[in-house]
Length: 322
Image (tube, rainbow, N blue to C red):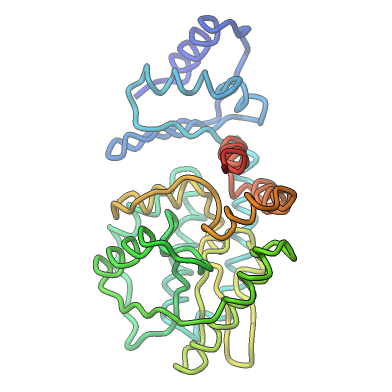
C-alpha cells in the first residue's frame, strides 16, 4: 500500500505538525492485511519504534487516521528474533509430546508454519486455509473465562454475566461442549475482602487444582491454558502423574495483539480493565493491594505479552476505581 519512503515521509510530516523533531527512522519491513485493514510496521530497533509511535501514541494515532486503516502495530526486528528463538525451543518440547496426541501434532504444524513465516504469519489466515486431522475423541480440557482472549484464557474467581455470554457464544460457534466446574471460593473471597491477601495467586492455584481434578476424573491427559509467559521449554509442563499443562499462546510465542486479531472473528464482547469484580472491590477497600496487581501487569510487559501502552491503560484503570 505504501513504500517505506512514502511511509517515512508521512510519519515525519505528522511529527512536524505536532512539534516533534524530524528523525531518520529505519524500517525493516511493512506488512498490510487488506482483509482486516491492519498495518504492521517492523522497525530496525526499538528507538525507531518509539519514533513512529510518538509521545503518548500521537504519531501512530494520526498516521492511522491519515492512512484510513483499522489499526497499526509497530514492532522492532529484535522482537522477531526473540520469537524465532522461543519458537525453536517450543518446537523441541512439542516434538517430545506430539505422538501422544493428534491435537499436539496439529499444534506443532502451526508452530512450524509460524517459524517459516515469522514476519508475515497470520494465525487467522493459516487456520482457515489449512486442513488438520480431527481427534477421535476429546483429548484436552480448555480452561475458559470468556474474556477478550476467551478460548486462550484461564478461570476467573467471580464470573460476571457478560463473560458467560461470551462463553456461550464461543462454544456454540466452535461446536464444543462446555461445563462449569462448581467450587467454593468463600474462604478466598472472605479473606481477600478482609485485606488478608491479594486474591489472584490463591484463586489461580485453587482454580488450577479444580481443573486438574476434572481432567483426571475424565481421563484427559492435557489441560490447555491461556498462559502467554511460559514460552519455549516451558510451553508444556507435567502437573500430575498423567496430567500435562499446555500453555497454548506461549507455545506459539503469541502476543496480545495476535490474540485479539484471532478473537475478532468471533464477535466477542470486549471489556476494559484488569481482573474480576472481587479484585476491584479489594482495590477499593485496600488500595495498597494495587501494587501487587501492577507487579502482575509489569511481569507480562517484561515478557512482551503486553505493549507498554496497554500496560499503562490497565494500571490507570485501577485508579478509576471508586
